[in-house]
Amino acid sequence: MNELAVVRGDLRARFGTGKGVGVQAVFALLVCLATLLGLSPDADGATPSQVVGGVSIAILVAAAYVAVAISSGEIAIPGEKTLPDLVMSPFSAGEIVRGKAITSAVFAAHLALATWPAFYFLNALRDGSPWVAAAQAGVVAAVVWGFAAIGTWLSGAVEGDLVRSLAAWGLLAGVFGLLPLLGFPSFQPVRAVHPGVAGELRAMCALFSTVIGALAFWGSARRIPYLRAET
Image (cartoon, rainbow, N blue to C red; front, side, top):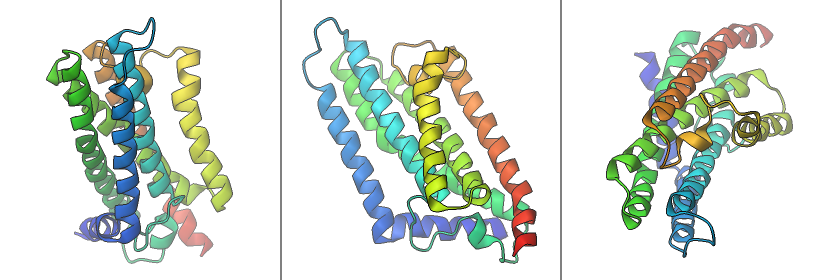
């Protein structure tokens, strides 16, 4: 299966190179720092749930950035190939995109597992349920997969490192800044990762993230023939 060749190359780069490990180490450090902030006394007028919610949002934003930055090529990992790098490979567009989708799913699960101990600890510290921590990690996995899919599409659809970086940052600002202001309750990761929300909202956010990710990967598959025609 040629898809597995793409997956092996990507995962070997992310988990087997100094830069790949370094990026994950920085992410782990950010998660630890955010957790330490959650240990501070609750601010005046802030409930324990609000404090944990704020820390949870910070962790989710960091995970989403890592996903979109790596998959779009903004953070270039030695040995990992983006869509333009795979254009001249013998693999079909479907094989390339399926491989990227599997890579994104594995990496999303990895980042979610990395955030779960922080969610569990903060919830337990304030008498929260461990199942809430698991649900929060599930939201992280779904949102990260969606962001990774969009990053994959950006790598093939947007030329120029600067423009691609601006697009990635604009995506982060739109999802985590603009959507809450516009009030779309069905897809608000900043609300879905909050420990106090209903399970239905988390499920809806995960569903939307999955659908958006699937559409982005479909767009990537459609883009590859145009990239091959241009080379």
